[in-house]
Image 1 (cartoon, rainbow, N blue to C red):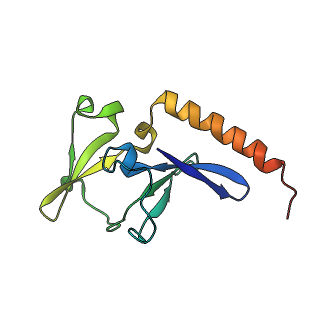
Image 2 (tube, one colour):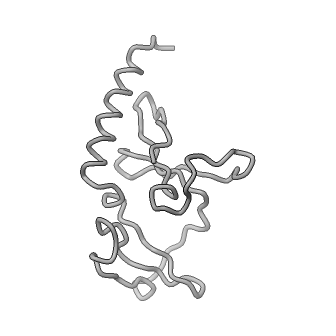
Length: 124
């Protein structure tokens, strides 16, 4: 699920392959020529970035379009609601709940190790 690290101003940010994590794609990597439209979405706290296959749109929606769901319906409660959009339901994810506490701890340890590795390189 870890695709690698993004060097963001000298700080290593773990990059999570979100479709693979959610079971939407089984293989570890899709060759660039087969899927050139992948994007990184940086979490607001900068603790992780998520590799996604596409971003369809950024929209503002009214409260009437958002439908809450039961927290027990999803793993770790990561899906917090559904959005009605063009005759389909789009899941709304809570970024802090996408990873379990254990996964976040492991990523933090890997990021610390990567920071140490980056610090060993001379400044350009």
